[in-house]
Every structure is written in C-alpha cells, then in structure tokens.
Image (cartoon, rainbow, N blue to C red; front, side, top):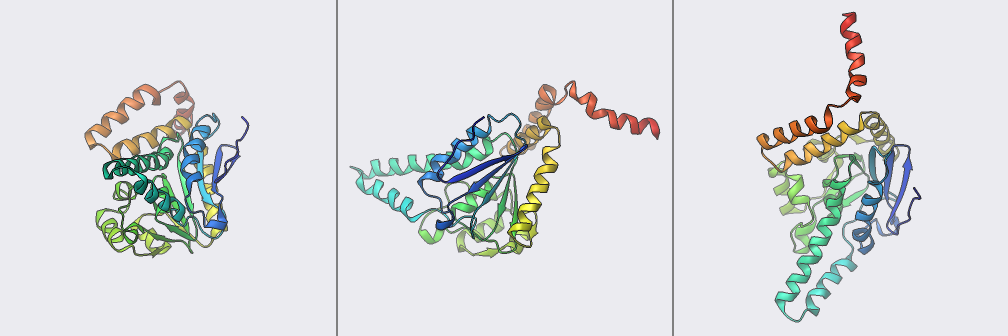
Amino acid sequence: MTLPTWQFFQVRLDGPVAWIMLAQPQQANALGAAFWDELPQVVAWLNRCDALRVAVLAAEGRHFCGGITLDLLEGVLAMMKAAETPEDGRERVRDEIFRMQASISSLELLRVPVIAAVHGACIGGGVDLIAACDMRYAAADARFCIKEVDLGIVADVGTTQRLRHVIGLAALTELSFTAETFDAAKAERLGLVGAVLADREALLAHVAALAGTIAAKPARAVRGIKQSLLYARDHTVAQGLVQAAEWNATLGFSPNMDALLAPLRARTRKS
C-alpha cells in the first residue's frame, strides 16, 4: 500500500508498528482544523494494513501538544455568532463538537493497541487525545493540564468520560476544577502514565521495545483484548464476561491454538 501524506501527521511503518507523529512542532502541535479532519483518515488507512500490530502516537518538536488552536476556538465562536437564531447557533456548535468527539474516538476504532508517548506540554485537547489511547508513557519533562475550565468550557471530547476509569473520579474532579498543571511524576502516581523515562529519546526507545513485545503476541488475541477492555469500561462486569466468552468462542479458539499450546505441552511432558 502506498503511504498517504497528511498535513498535520507524519506516519511511517516500521514492520508491524505504525508511528503516528504529530508533526506541527512550530505550533507546539496544537490541534487545528487539519488534525480533526485527518485523524480519522489516518485510522481508516491503518486499519487496512494487514501486517499492522501496534501503533505509537508521539510528537515532533519540544512539546507533545499545546491544546486546541485559538483559530479553531475563534471559528466556533464565529459559527455561533453567524447563526440566524440562538437555537441555530447552539445546534451548529453541538454538531461541530460531535465531529471533534468522533475524531478523537477514532483511535478506539483502530484495531490495534495505541501507545501514547508524551514529552513536553500535553495541554487540554492533548489530554483528550492520550485519554483515547490504550497505554500512555511520558518523558520526565512532560507536564499535563486539563485546561478547559480556564476557557469557560467543559472538557467535551473525552477527558471527562475516559480518564475517570484511568485515574479515578476524585483525582479527575480536582484536576478538572483547578486546571492544575502537573508533572510526569504525578501522572505516574495517578496511573495516567505507565512509566516515566529520562528524556524523549529514552521514551521513544521504551515504547518501541514495548510495541515490539506486543507485536510478537498473537494478533487476534491482542485485538480481542483491546475490544474487551473497551467494552468492559462501558458495561457491567456480567456484560463484560459475556462479551469475552462470545469473543473467545467465536474467534479465540482456532486451529492456530494448537501451535500456541505446543510449548506448554512439551514442558508438561518433561515435568
């Protein structure tokens, strides 16, 4: 497959691993119009790559993401002001927010795990973005902020809904009300990131090694785990158990399992 080009992203394939790079470093990778248009396109293209096993989301430049661009916020305000009636304005803004929500949520539709590698600033919309990833890691210089309250708005593209399952409701509530900027060490204590590495170079090496480990696992099982974790987040334990059983009964137990069980059988015979 020919690798497309995008304005906001640079994407490269390293064997079974896709590197999705936020590539607007001159703007601190702030999330402008191109980002929201292109992220679902990137996901759709990667989902057609049969050899893909893992994706890494990282960034060029000094910062992971400076949040939503001022131009985009101004555009939403202009959209509301240009409406013929207040009701029409609210509907236009709501539709635009729905579109942005769908863009971020597209990461959950990527059939392989997505690992976020955060360095420098990760502000506002950047937190929304990593919240939609399956795993998150940070460099020691990373700093995070749920910034929306300072703009007079509610975080509306995923932080509120996703992070309560990652860092807990108490921590999320405090960080949302205060817009506190917190460092990588606190992010690790909260469980927002799985580990903190010395710098960006060490961070990228760490996630590359992790991606390689996951890529070597049975692809069907890895996809099933991602689906089960996402399903369990939004359903009861009983519903999640049914989903996992249905998945294994339909896709998990296959002729390939004989090959996977062979080493276990050999060890059992030796013991």
